[in-house]
Image 1: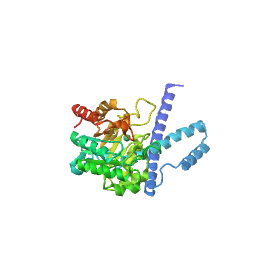
Image 2 (image 1 turned 30 degrees about the horizontal axis):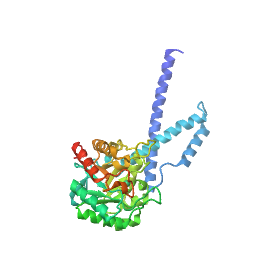
Image 3 (image 1 turned 120 degrees about the vertical axis):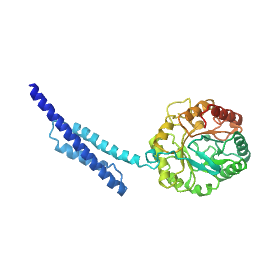
Length: 358
Ligand SMILES: [Mn+2]
């Protein structure tokens, strides 16, 4: 084969490549138009039946030299690239996305306590509200330490149904009374949409727990009230799923959402969960919402809380959550990992001394 002949064939290939590029780009535009129609109709973008029909038609018309399998592989690639294009479009339009809202969302709680923005937030308190005395003891210590927001569980979704399930509404009342007595705000988990309305009197921030991050009816319900929400990342939730859970809340009108990384389930056994520090900068990059880190549940051990809290703040977290109990050994839940009051004071002082807590 002469060089002239080879050059001719190569030029022909370049031409075909150009035509293919034009065609797949045109195809992508049509797919986007279909996506827009489907979006209006509220039907899912991926239609496996339709994809199967398209592939079968292509295989039936295939005259070679490619095998049917190769044709399937090549076109599947084109199909999925087009679908990806649609989901990227969708991602851009998320209400929680920073692409849509460049500035940080700053949530202003009663008493001008802010979450997000320039100052860091420390949220502390017992795993469970167990008694008036226990809750008040913690509240007094938190006030003394300069903490503004107290957490305390009243509805406890526990691994075993035989474990302490929390004091329910009585627990919320105890939490509110102790917080008011010591000038604190309250965060507590709500697990049932039917409890939300009654709970509004007792909590300044509604927590949606890790086990309920995928409870879409609960997410919609907290999206419809005028109360900030602290959304925990699910135990096995990807960041994409976490962000979409927040979108469920915001799509219902509630824009005051804080995200909290609380560790994910991995094969590592030396901590209760694996603290995903990289989640912090990724969430800050992708969303405009405040991001907190729960050092207690992510690690499950007291001896590494200080470095983990510092790491979280260094990575850009807007706040830290930690569990404090007057006598952790007798706690009805999470006994091993809660700090006692002295330990909490040391913890908070060290975190402040690092200069990372603003
Ligand atoms: Mn706990």
